Image (cartoon, rainbow, N blue to C red; front, side, top):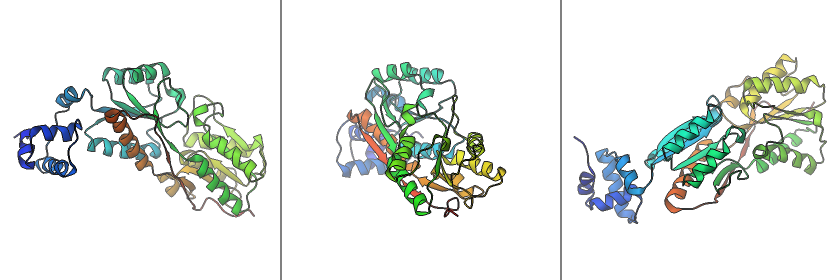
Length: 338
């Protein structure tokens, strides 16, 4: 037997209009009545008709999250938080991979009249014209860029890489490291991804350490931030015969490849070279040498992104910027300079 809004209203002891207002968020309902309705919905296992709901609210109740690489657990944890929060708010989630036919994907989202989108993706994989068209037609956006690259205002949820990089430098300096390398999967000219590199340069200067271009390796288009890229970049850095004693790698996925390259080069971690990475994913815990890595609550990042999208859709808020705090998790891959 199909459960209706009338059934929910009778069980909660309220009107069907109140039930609709709680589900759609169209009018204020007291906390007491709202909790009664939510309890009745749960007990009756009521599933709102999203098509009818969209006609009432003028919303599609669909959102999207766009990521770069489904094989990277960093993105998986963000998706988990995003989906859980979307479910609580009765949204359907579309998941897209940024480097898989992005033009077709955005055209599909446009045709669905999607309410909001969260972008955790390289800007080079985004067709800007289509995104600007979507924004002009009412789709709201939360991006992961420190600077908004679009014509229309959007909100952002970024990681505090500047504060995180300070923690990395303080840790390495305490261990006696002065010659610190850096591996990134994109070039410094890719503006939306400069925060970590700029932070690296800032703290070299702040702590009176040497900046040396031979200590740096950057990826080339098309950009990949995976194991293979980390392996290649680390071998390239080691082949220069520099005197670095530590290296900062842009993410755990690449850092695992870097660890293997160091091993193949006949060196040991951390005895010969210390390795620090970003993200604190499962890779950092199961790698051959457990990685010292900068932690960010990725699931909470996804939750906050969905909450912000809903706020933008229902309350017309805009230009909100949230920075996710970081914490350095010290493991086996960093040690004192010998």
